[in-house]
Amino acid sequence: MIKREMENKRVSGADLARLLEITHSTVTGMLQRPTIQVQRLAELSELLKYNFFREIAEKLPYAEPNYTEPAVRAEVTGLQTRVRDLELEVSILRQTIRDLVSR
Image (cartoon, rainbow, N blue to C red; front, top):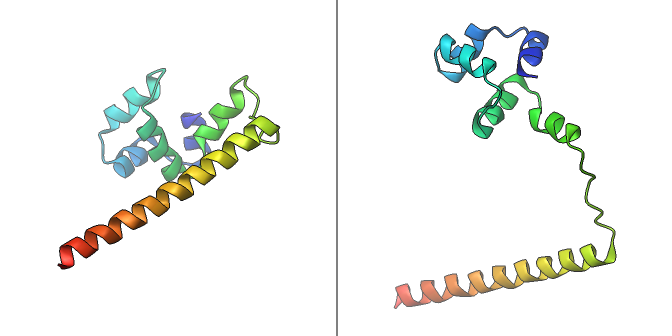
């Protein structure tokens, strides 16, 4: 995928090495390995303006979650309520700290 996108964008190994601030031999080794670190793939996605993660996800045999199922909707609603409650708690705690510090 990376080599294909490099060709599509007309980016050489030397160009990529310069952009990533690594040696050309490091780029060569990275492109030959069967695996890559997530952070590096994110950097390559940004540099090559291509979402490698989406392509990988499309190849996975798993269906998208069905967020319209009542049980899932109820869980999402419950989590949203919990987030609001926690945000309120954080706000109260921040104000309490400010009040204590100003005394």
